[in-house]
Length: 244
Image 1 (cartoon, helix red, strand yellow):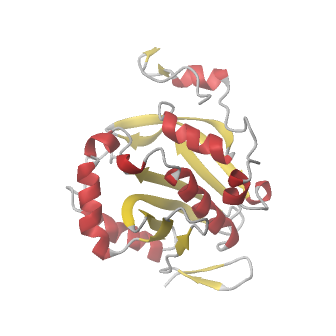
Image 2 (cartoon, one colour; image 1 turned 180 degrees about the horizontal axis):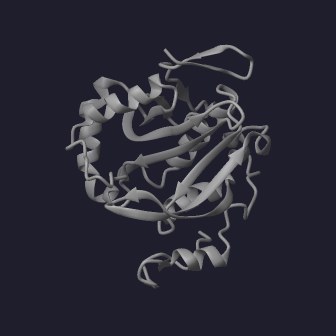
């Protein structure tokens, strides 16, 4: 079984999935995904199908899980056993309302990970997503000893761009046709934080109103570049500005 070292030198079990509760009384909890979540997960994914379809990761080979949440959960748990992912459920007041995955975990000289997530439509606009992202980032920095956390966002996803703006993630560049989403390779904007940016913690900094203003601002050059399809050189539906 794979093992990894924390900052203090202790071993981290590859199968350990944390439970992280917001102690501010918001009712938001992150916890490890379980096989018995399959029914609730299936319900939420079907209920929010239209809401999520535009942002859904797809496989360029055409392979899908055929709507089988158990297969998806098995894959996510296998990634956790291999120490390359941390699959978490987002709960609000005890109900499953989304999922957050820390993926591409690398230790040693790079010590980094990526965050991806989805949230049910009924929980949108209630600060659930920024709280969950902040909690997960803080956990990766403090408990796992990671140095850098990254979030990549499609240029037209205004809600997620607002999340990184709120939390003070720093814009790091445009990644052309980076992830296969909703049936095609899509451009993404990359944002990141390193541990030294947030000695007080991402969640504490945000709630204290101290997240830097403007760090997530996208240069006009990149906004314009992302607004055009390089294959056709014609305008797409991307916004020309991303200052939300």
